[in-house]
Image 1 (spheres, rainbow, N blue to C red):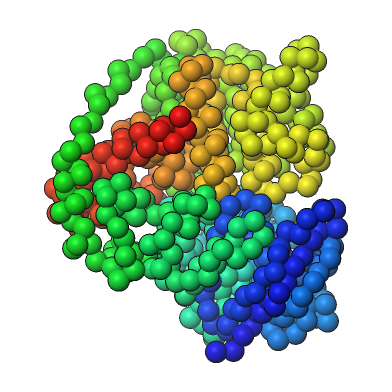
Image 2: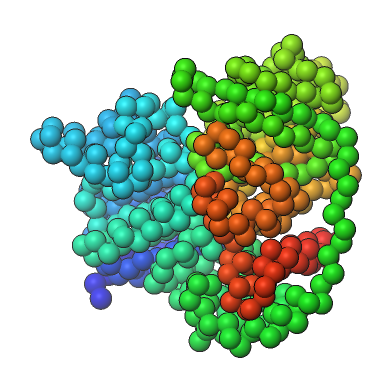
Amino acid sequence: MEPIIEFKDFTFKYRSQTEPTLKHINLTINKGEKILIVGPSGSGKSTLAHCINGLVPFSYSGEIDGEYYVGGKNPKDLGIFGLSKIVGTVLQDTDGQFVGLTVAEDIAFVLENDCVDLQKMKDKVAELAGKVEIKKLLTNAPGELSGGQKQRVSMAGVMIDDVDVLLFDEPLANLDPATGKTAIELIDELSKDNDRTIIIIEHRLEDALWRDVDRIIVVGDGEIIADTTPDELLCEDILEREGIREPLYITALKHAGCKVTSDTHPMHIESMDISGYSDTVNKWFKKITLPEPKEKTKKVLEIKDLDFEYNKGTPVLKDINFDIYEGEMLSIVGKNGAGKSTLSNLICGFIKPDRGQIKLYGEDISGLSVKERGERIGLVMQNPNQMISKAMIYDEVALGLTVRGVPEEEIKERVYETLKICGLYPFRNWPISALSFGQKKRVTIASILVMNPEIIILDEPTAGQDYRHYTEIMEFLKRINSERGITIAMITHDMHLMLEYTDRAVVIADGVLLADTTPADVLTDETVSAKAYLKKTSLYDLAVKSGIDEPTKFVECFIYEDRLKREEAVN
């Protein structure tokens, strides 16, 4: 096989750091391979990607020891422009990638630079827009799009250039589960075209493995911890040790006491041979006794007959009715563009409903200003860049308390406590510009948590977070929910989050309320999952393949058992 990327005893240290971020990397990626790179935040996987696409050393300077080659050439000799003709990158933070005033202009940017004939350009843009399902958005400005729509525009913009290597940095971070499946299928198709090499960096391992990959490279503390096949990796304890979430069906098999072996081909639950595990899984399922469901408490928020449209004649939300109860943790789920973020903007007063009421503890809040609502309802937005207004981390988290005149000593105490819980205390004196996208997300969560609101609405709280930080944040949210009684509503695409941490799911699709039930019900209902662009949980497939005739109850048993094990680990 012909190598296209090679690292030989490669070490890299950023100019501002005392210790290297990458240490003695030896890695060969061959032409036509499809590689998945995983690792916790700060492990060095993003720096490895930056070396491949030229951001290191051309944008981020530092010291390089050892050798590395892209397309058989030294990147220093190619320059950033030469590398861009070999490696195309889809960034996680898509706002940093847009250059056009419209979606069509943005996708066509490379072709315009290459002076491609106008009609050929239009045809190519239309073809790619159709592939990533954004044809209707070609005249929209990128800033008008949802997070998932922006991700697809970025993907089309990179695909349009005929590069040898396509590098995807967290391609699933802002996508609903069904669109994520489509994205993985599209990436898989691209890997079969013209021996193109595909490199995917992704936290959502199970979703990224929806289609085969040749190898998984695990990066930890600047070193390559493992470089092996998915089947081999899923049988070892490397993922757990490195703080990377393994597929749910693998966790369920381990809970049941099964030892997973590579000859069962565990990369996909659909094709995995579980004949040797079925009896053990059934015995485990029958042993579990579920607790009684919690009784509903006082209504915190009431959404009554809510209608809203941005453009007349095009409803975004239609006749939405549901309540949120005191002390509850619930998920609001549905496909990209379904109206979930619009709903949160209506609750917070950024926009006004065309019809209907929103009540907080029984009182109509239509007369309250955004500031007055903000005293009681905290919103953590999906894109951290839209919330951050200060240069330094401490100042950003302290801002809400400062403008309310809280004494300086109390501000310091509350900010430090919140930063510790969110895993940001070591960076308290850092500039925000030095943080990764995931770290910025945690800063915005901290800036709301420090205010102690009555209800917190989080828009994609775990997007871009590795499993360790995801668990830290979610366990913290769970703790303030149970200990302080703060009600929490999460708009999320993360089906694991919905299953593990919430007891209720409100499903919105095409502007209407599709379901209001338990997460297990939602993720074992093919009709609801399909309409809302969700993805049926792999636990359902495991139950069916094991001959269990109550798959929904099996999922509930897994959730209960998993929560117990997490509580044991925390305590």
